[in-house]
Image (cartoon, rainbow, N blue to C red):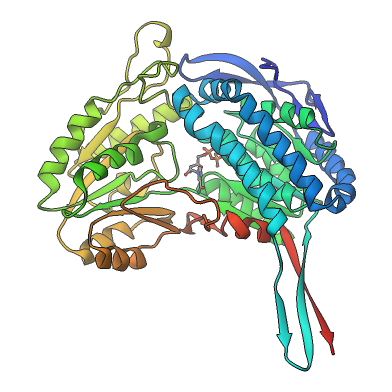
Length: 483
Ligand code: NAD
C-alpha cells in the first residue's frame, strides 16, 4: 500500500494520470499546507472510465454471487490489515482525530464491504402466486454502469457505503470521491488491485464536482447515480439526471433536532449529546445541531453542557488526547465562523467558543474552531434553519410536546432526530410526529446496516442500507407464467 503524494485515477485496473495532465492541490487542514496533488479530471477521463466499466460489465454481472463475495471480502481484509495507513490518510486529508479514523471511519469502511458481500449471498426476490391462474416472480438484474459520488466528511466510510452494494449486485462502477479528501479512495484502488478485482469493475475518477462529477451524472451510459453531499448539489444533479430518467439516490444535508426531556438519563444524555454535537468537529450530516431542552431542565443542562464543552481538547489530530481536530478547509472554516457572526447579529449569546482556535507550534496555520454553544435564538432564524456543518450548536428551552414538534419540524431538512426520555409512550409519539428519516431514542449514531437510511424533505430522496441499497442497484422485472 503506497502513500503516494501524486494521487492517480484508477481506470481499467491501472493507476493513471488525468488526460489534461493538470492537478489540484490537496491540503492537510490541520497544518494548513498542501501535501499532495489530485488529478483534475474532465469528461474525457470519465468517458474512458465508463468505457472500462462497460467492458467489465458482462463478466462481472454473470460471474456469480459467490465469486463477487470472495473478491469483496478480500478487499475488506486488505483494508483491515492496513488500518493504520488508511486511518492516517483519512486523518491527514480531513483534519479529524486519528483516533476517530481508527475507531470509526476505517472499521466502518471494511464493515460496509463485508456487509454487502454477505448480503448479496442472501438476497432473494419476491414471488406472487395467483392461486390456480398464474404465478409471478421478480427477477432482479444489475443496472449496468452506475455512478457513485461522495462527500468529504466521512470519506472512505461513505465511498464504500455506495460502491459495495453496487458491486455486490453485479454492477460496474465509476466513482468520484470528494476533491478535498481523495487519499483513502486512492488507497482503496490499490487494495482492489491487490485483491484481484477484475479491471474496469471499479473505476475511480478524481477531480472537481462541477467537472468530473457532473460528467458522470451527464453521461448517457451511466444508468444510476448514488450521491451523498449538499442539498444544493443534489438539486443540480437531480436536474441533470431526471430528464435522462436515471435512477437516483440522493443523501443530502441536515439540521437535526436533539430533543431532551427532563426525565432522561442525564449522564448518558450528556455524554452522548457532547458527541452528537461535536463528533468529527460537528461535520456529520447526523449531528444534532439544534438542541431543545425541556424548560425546567434547561438551566441545569446549560451549565453542565457548557462546562463539559469547554473541557474538549482541540488540536493535534495525532494525539490520543485530542477530542477535536481541524475542520476540512479554510473556506469551510470561514463559512462556519461567518455563521457564528450571523448568530450574534440575530441576537444569539455565545456561551462558549465562538472563534477560531489558534493552536501553537506545528499546527499554527491549521483550521481549528472552538466548539461553540449559542443560546437566545428563535427557532426560525437563519442560524437555526440553515446547515452550518461545523462545531456549532444552539440550545433552546421548550414547554410542551406540541411546541417542540413545531420547532423541530420547522426546517427544510428532515434527515435525523434524537429524543431523550424514559417515557416510552412519549418517545413513540414524538418519534412518529418528527419529520425525519431516522429517529434515535436515548442514543445517537447507533447503526444497524440492515435498516433503511436516508432523509425526508430536502434531506434526500430514496433510502440506502440493507435490502434498500440492493434494490436500488438492481432493476426489477416481473415474469408472469399462466398455469
Ligand atoms: P458537496 O455537495 O459540495 O459535494 C459532494 C460531492 O459532490 C463531491 O464529491 C463533489 O465534488 C461532488 N459534486 C459537486 N458538484 C457536483 C456536480 N455539479 N455534479 C456532480 N458532482 C458534484 O458536499 P460536501 O461539501 O462534500 O459535503 C457536505 C454535505 O454533505 C453536507 O451538506 C452534509 O450534510 C452532506 N452529507 C449528507 C450525508 C447523508 O447521508 N445525508 C452524509 C454526509 C454528508
